Length: 86
Image (cartoon, rainbow, N blue to C red; front, side, top):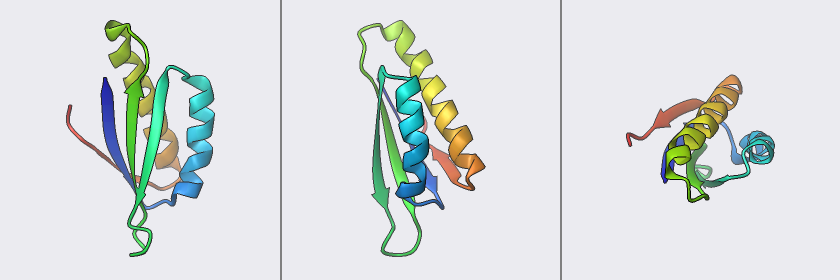
């Protein structure tokens, strides 16, 4: 399973500290970031979260937990979040 959301307003270097901490806490979810808009002065990061286990029942719960934690911590840094629908 996979979840995708965008983060606006903070550079990837600032978000990387948060991602590093969360990766340690949630090892079964792969977090990939794709920076965008840097050259235009409008930093945007597309986050792609993927569940790496075989337990589909647990996958949705773990992805939601990681996404909730990322959104909370990135928002506290001043980021605006845009969540894509499932």
